[in-house]
Image 1 (cartoon, rainbow, N blue to C red):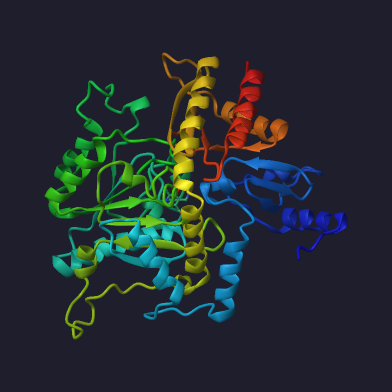
Image 2: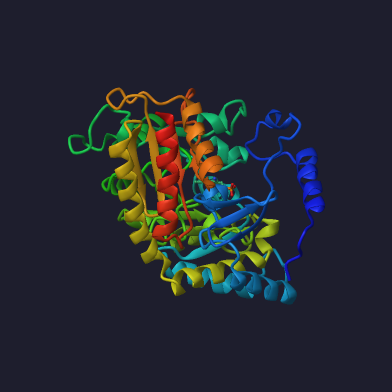
Length: 463
Ligand code: PMP
């Protein structure tokens, strides 16, 4: 039942898009020239998309920002959403819904230690819920002073002012201040550019122990929580060493600090386990997720907590202020959990976690082959189908390539090979030199080889 648009109609859409839409992350002066126009994506199937001019691309970033985990064109998700919308599209407040109840149980089954799910509609918002939980608990259980939230340099947690206050990336943050008070930055944990000048194997995991020093410096009675990405995504695909999270957990426990893991990117299979933190022998107090929850077929995010956190909000009903006084209007949309249920069913039915492990290993091996071939590749890192390449001018000094070089490689892949790859955000003032890949969990060797070939051509042309 797909409607076919005439060429004339498509031209009109391209013009409408150019004239009326303000696009995310876009410098629009690039489109001031006649003939230049932002891309309009028209359709997708599996891992391939088609634009309004009829060009087909292999999408190696799952919808631009690592979201469409199960691939495009899934009729079973569309049908589940359609059936649910016809039955009941929405109801919010203290009532639940059938797919909301069912998905919560299915999700918690994959997260031992987590016991409650709170629905909202974006990753930023899911994170804000945790900040509010931490801050309300500071008031409910003390004088309100245990309200500070620690975040890490190079992590991203969202676009709203609270979530941005907890973000450690120059490019996202600069010029948007003043920020919300009470957010404190911890150093990053990137071994390739160790902030302590150490080498893994010869270090004492200073990046994790730095949390203790920071809490002491701030005053343990003032720190309520810490938010961390399990694997830093937009900040450069940074995988912590195995010791990192257990040390963080122990420090948090000792100081009554809630550990909040932001799984907005890694959640729902991207790294080969249901959640990124599950690689690291740690049980958090709160976990947030969004993108892959419904693979972009509907907007949905979840904030999950332990029963211990949830219980702290229970009180005598006569205490009118002692409950989580938060609401999200679109947390009441049923399309989200209906899509999420079927999204999870697909991951299970098609054994996609196993595929991510296998294809992730294959992808990583092939990226290392490119590293052997091209001096410009300083580092290959990632987990599962979430990989990054850091580009440098010189492997010894690790001086980053100019931003235009990474942009040039990505542009070459799109223009010459019709493969869309990603780039991370500028974490430092001057450069952004990491390419990022997050192909759908259904990737096979064919698509991965296509990405590698595109990179090979692009790097060869750089020489
Ligand atoms: N956390 C992380 C780790 C993210 O990468 C993002 C989005 N890129 C967010 C939070 C914010 O999610 P959203 O854009 O849905 O608000």
